[in-house]
Image (cartoon, rainbow, N blue to C red; front, top):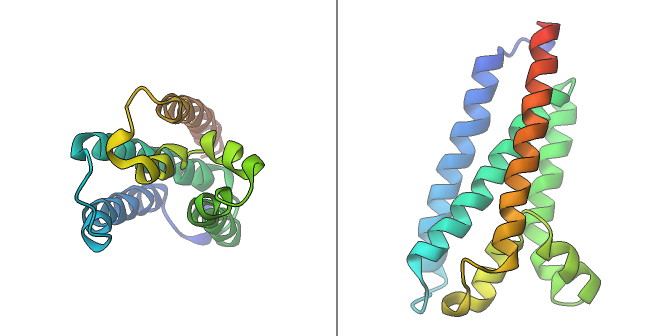
Length: 150
């Protein structure tokens, strides 16, 4: 990305700030728009915050690994498509449901399916924590490699 004229700090800022803004808006608006009344707000905030953190880390990882804006756009769009359609397709196929449970969107999707029955001890939360650890490690190595190039 540095070759395309975008400074590293500028890109990192946009990769972090926009997902945080959109996550906050979504976390506030989704329950209102869906008129959900029977929900545990703290559990919801934990699930949505951890999911947002994984998305931010994945976008940062893409920023450090991709060579140009086209690669970044394709990879980021793929993340959005996965986050959007995986929960829908999981309703139709058990194998897709299993993939979703181990994906970064699993806890969020399962929360909306179970609402007040969802617990923070659910396997999807632990999978999400695993995603945070793995993406953090991958981001660290991508950042170190990128620093050597600069």
